[in-house]
Length: 480
Image (cartoon, rainbow, N blue to C red):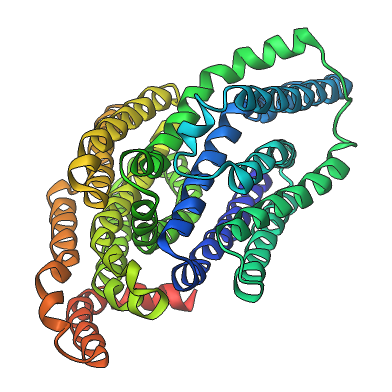
């Protein structure tokens, strides 16, 4: 039992570390895009990336979700059956993806031209579809590695994909003066590389076949998960497609750049959650009555996210001056909304672990409600307010989703959170994050260096009392 716990903690650490590295690679591409590409070009990349992720989820039919379940069900009974099971799923995913792409070509006017509105078919859509064709094999091999607890190999494969894509993107755009096609070509090349690596790795894990009895069993398990996965995509990426369809590619780029800066909060929260989740389950198992420890840790985690959100929001205008063309400057206006959306999402991470205390049946319904909320808000808000509409829709969706899931979680496993304390943190964080709306116009009358100094002083005045109050715990963390 102890070795299993250590294995879980070790895997969580590996996935968390490599997850941060992957997210970091995307974040560090932002200066390249914002400084060298026009807004229309970046709009093509952002929209195409959102469509690629949607189609990969759709064509995968969530069959990867059944991998771990059936591996553990049969690995000690019939390993040959496990290989046939993997081989059937792998074969069907490949066939279904090819079939799906052929259908897209046949229905080009009704589907592709809607998903890729304002984007030329050659080379952008073709490059995107190449990535869609190649990625399912890589993702299925990933699911096998994770089912077998081969965390390092799975994470290295992920990093190979993202690292290759980032390095080729930088080379093509910076050195060879490619535009949006450079980023999409890099995605295709990286997808092809991990496709080959995955084929080599997967050959020992599967028996290539198409057993319809196995396929029926797999689809029965996986298809109910598909709406949940698509809803998760819709909650986080559908705004890009809707901005393009209801407005323009340039607006997509402005929103995406601001969102990337705001998502630095998400970057921090994903790393924290990789360590927090195993700790939470350990607390529930070993000290079920000492819930105040969970409350205390949650308060400090949310305070950390709030500080990051305020800093990102306050400094975003100056960050954009440094990394981007003047055409991207207005992007700072969405940062406070996106950053605060992910502060609230960070709170969701802390208590949503309750769902995994054998209560996962609630998640698909809640995620679908969140997706419908986001779609509805974007539909009405984007035509009226553009990128503000998308940003407000994102924040509002996170608030509604968090309140709903929090209510359900408290019924499953009540934790005495200090709700008033959390509301004060959220409210103060949002108000401080919105300071640029009131002061930026006046600050732009002074020099850039003076603006940085003034904002740094403001942040110091905000953070010093927090640091002083938590000094002993900060020292303990540093010492650890």
